[in-house]
Length: 323
Image (cartoon, rainbow, N blue to C red):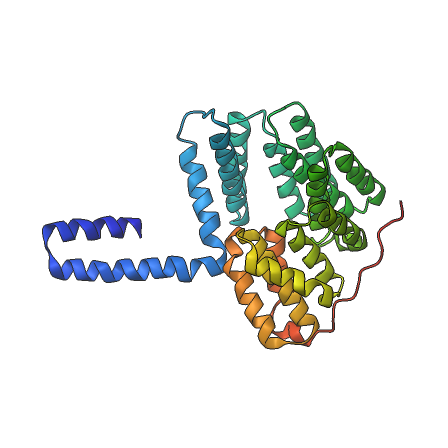
C-alpha cells in the first residue's frame, strides 16, 4: 500500500487523470484490506514487528535505552513470527542476532524459553527462564518489571512441568524481590495473569488471592482490575467479574486491557448462555488479535467460538498445592 501511495502522488503530479483514478481505487482497496481484514487475523502486528526487526538489524548498535528496548522487542517479535511460520532456522538466526547484538539482555534466553514452551518442553523452558533471570541479575539496567515478567513465565513453565514445589518457590522468590508496594502489586498481577494461561489454571484459587491483594495495593489500576476480572471469570464468578471488566473496557486507554476485558466479558456471556453477547465480545477481542499473546489468542478461538454459548458455566479448577 505504501508503494501504491507513492505511485498515486507521482501520477497526480504528472496530471494523468485516468491512471490517477485507477491507482486511487487500488490504494483504497489495499488500505481497506490492511485495516479491515489483517487485524482480524492477528498478522499485521506480527508482520510489522518482523519487518521492523529486519530493518533495525541494518542499523549500527544503538545506545539510547528506549531505542535499544524497541530493537530488542522487534527482534523478539520477528523471531516468533518466523517460528510460527515454520521457518525454524531463520527464527534461530534472528534469535542469534539478538544475542550477538545485545549479549547483556536476558531476552535471548527468554525467547528460547518461549520456543521450548511452544514445543511443550516445559522443564527446559523453565531452565531457560532461570538463565534469563541470571543474566538479568548481572545487568542493573534490566527493569524490575522485566524481572517480574520473567519470574511469572518461569512459574508457568514449572506448573506445566508438574513441579508444584518449584513453582511455589518461584512465586515466593519473585515476591521476595519486590521491595515497594507498587513492585509487589506488579509481581502479584504478573503471577495472577500467568495462572490464567492454559495448563496453569489449577492455580486460579491462588491467583484469586494474588489479584485481590494487587488491587488493595493499587486500587486505581485498571490493568490490575482487568486481571482480577479475568481470574473471577475463569472461576465462574461472573457477577463479581462483570462490573470490573465493564469499567476497564470503558475507561482503559491500553489496548491490551481492552482486549483482555473483552475476552473475559465473553467468558461471562458464555457462562450465562447469552449468544449475542458472546458473539459481540468475541469480535471485540478479535479486533485486538495482533497484540494478544499466542496463548490468549488460542483461548479466544477455543472458548469464545459460536457453539460455546451452549456450554455449562465454567467450574472452578482443583486447588493449588498447599504451602
